[in-house]
Length: 441
Ligand code: ATP
Ligand code: MG
Image 1: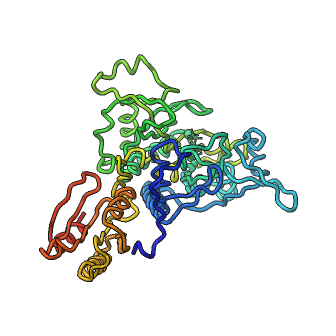
Image 2: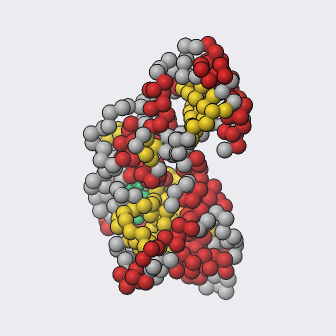
Image 3: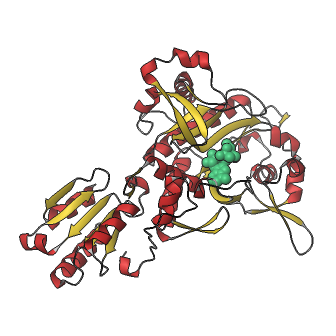
């Protein structure tokens, strides 16, 4: 992408209404633009990040055997009357009336809708277990939308729903999502610790919140740093093996991790002091099992193998896709701006032409840009007629992992400069080796 033809409204000023660093940086780097309280337009570079996060979530859900579909944002009130939640859900629900005076709502979540859809089609034990998910916008009329996309009113969520014949099956579906989450967040380059959450209406131990550590977090958290050493991508757990999944769950449950809601001082004292990590955190995901709450209230039954009828056991599994953009920035930034982890960066490389008015520089950059594109390296090419200093500042604030800097002096010696955003390390090398490195990185 040539910056001279792109839409990247970067600003120097720090917006006054933004309180936390990720919100400030998202506005300054031109990722989003607020259009109403708690509602944001995703500008091109922010949209690229959102799509990358969404795609990682999707791939890991698919690997875990969940099946993607897409449900609408607008739902009918009648659907919610079936579960009894229409009246119970408070002012967070945005209620809408259509021209025929029918009561509608903008979905804050989709338990009712997925239960109705699956209920009408799945009648037998052969149709279960299934986990269905979608990635769709939600609306919750939060009392206090704040921190930018972190607590918005309209936000993008991945929500998955599992249906099982019995509790044992429901546990396995839950463990499967637990592992999928561990892998999902690791791939994004952040640490999100599963913390025991206040258990849902059916009690039990099947509720975890995934928390990214950050000072601006809304919850207080406590966890055993033993978590930090695990590589969930590599861990050899077969999604098809009940034994592997149970072992994983025991391993996770064995390590202390809790929010202030579930914190147990006595157990905490048993964690070796050097391993105790305390701080604040942002909830980026939440999984829980809730038994037959919706299947029973909404009259969903399936025939069992021996001819009986049961209400399926269900669970729901959310990831805050748009919140993650903010949460990742909270975890990955420095004084100069965002430092994107590779996997979610909007572009991998920022190619900087230090002298756009110098024909030799321009043609060297054009050539590099073409070859990076041919090698499949996503590149944002700053070909604008601007000072070098301004270009560096822009690249630093938008946080692409690599900067490839081309100037007239270097070119005379046959070299370009490669800078790694995260470490600030700079290397002088030939254009050829720079291309090789970037293609391999
Ligand atoms: P919170 O406690 O932060 O209000 P929640 O418990 O109400 O969240 P869930 O219903 O568990 O949220 O939704 C699943 C995920 O959706 C959350 O883990 C969070 O990442 C995201 N999410 C929830 N509310 C918002 C919001 N207002 N803005 C952005 N993301 C949100
Ligand atoms: Mg939650």
